[in-house]
Amino acid sequence: MQASALNYDVLIIGGGFAGMSVALLLADSHISVGLLTKKSLEESASMMAQGGIAAALSPEDSPQRHAEDTLAAGAGLCKPEAVDLLVRHSKECIDWLTDYGVTFTSSDVRADTLPHLTREGGHTRRRVVHSEDATGAAIITTLESQIRAHAHIQSLEDRIVVDLITDESGTCLGAYVLDKPGSTVQTVSARVVVLATGGASKIYLYTTNPDTSTGDGIAMAWRAGCRVANMEFVQFHPTCLYHPHAKSVLISEAVRGEGGYLIRPDGSRFMHEHDERTELAPRDIVARAIDYEMKKGGYDCVYLDIRHKPATEILRAFPNIARNCEQFGIDITREPIPVVPAAHYTCGGIVTDLQGATDLSGLYAIGECAWTGVHGANRLASNSLLECNVFAAAAHDRILSDLERLPRADRSLPHWDESRVTDADEQIVVSHNWDELRRFMWDYVGIVRTNKRLERARHRVELLREEISEYYGNFKVTNDLIELRNLVQVAELTIVSAMSRKESRGLHFNKDYPDTLPDDQAADTILIPRCTP
Image 1 (cartoon, rainbow, N blue to C red):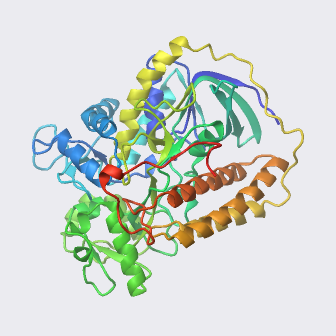
Image 2 (image 1 turned 60 degrees about the vertical axis):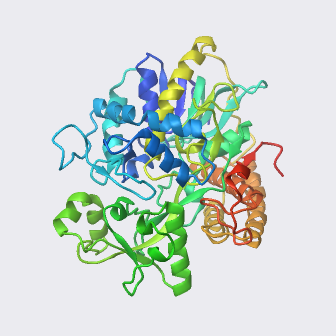
């Protein structure tokens, strides 16, 4: 069924921190904004962020040191100009959030306005600003109230984009949108479209991300003709709670930053055998170390131990983690936390410039779905929330100038045509394909890869893509079918990218190419639509 059309100056697809930031910035300039979310405004990967925002606020720190740590973690593939933009505007991000009413944990030491700063893996200084151990929730709940009260922002909740609408010149004109409660497809016209859809970690069986992280923005931008880059660099968070009834329960890196130890089931520490920085090594190193120990010892998990700290200190620093673990019968002040690595962050994405502009006129991408070069081959902890806001501000300036020259958003666009499709008669096909995809991606394109594993994954994803394409062409779209179609596309891009890299670097480790090329030979993996085999 075709619903009535909607028109906006700017349509923002994705309601996490990146989408909310650019929405508020644009709406304050009296721009009509549609903010589209797959579920409610409160549900996003940003909402689940625990650690915080990296910002060089301490007198012992500097943006230059922050940049050096980011470049080191990125393993030779960060773009220095992108990193410079990120770190130079970190204080502005904190100030902007504070002005909107976000409350950060205060310092116990200093009487001035400096917030409490914690430390995470890869950082040489304490520079992570946080709100206890639920920074994302503090940000999203605060900004959500501002979004709902803003006269120039219309929230479009419980909707998912089917595809972008483009013309022959490669200009993005809007999107076809499935209104899930009504099972209707709307045509949404916009002078500018911003993708802020987050990452694609749901291509894996185990992930810290919510169910909505299905790579929608990356897949639809690729289909529309945008390049994507560095999809092989998938960050696996080292510590996700291991429990048969737990789902996507992240144990923040800040637990290690505050002195937590990684131990084997027999209680012995092991990180000193893998890296001199021990538990504070970057995430790629810690995740591979845990993977190695689990396979070598035949363990189901390893353990994160913070028991040696005073209980009052643990509960003050990690109240939400303590509550989450308590639900599964784990007292983190008395026993170690069982943990395993899980897919956490997509370091690659849609190719953009430093203001979020993609290859298509009128189309922008910010946040985790975008590739600016800021993360390189491995993201430094707590740079992601910072990226959302800094690049939203940069995109805001460019979008305003674009709107001055682009036509009004009242163009007549073709309606969604479903006259030749029927209701799906076997929904079980979608769920089975989803499960198969996530399992073979975990087995073959995970933390440690080989050529043979990647070849097997490529063969399976091609068969799945053909099957899903046929299904998509014959049946009416549903949320699950749209997500599955996007997941398969992003999985294929990840596999092709991984097969293209003939070395091990950062988050990509291939046992058939264990060495890392010299940094002066380091190159990004750029995939071009219709030019990729």
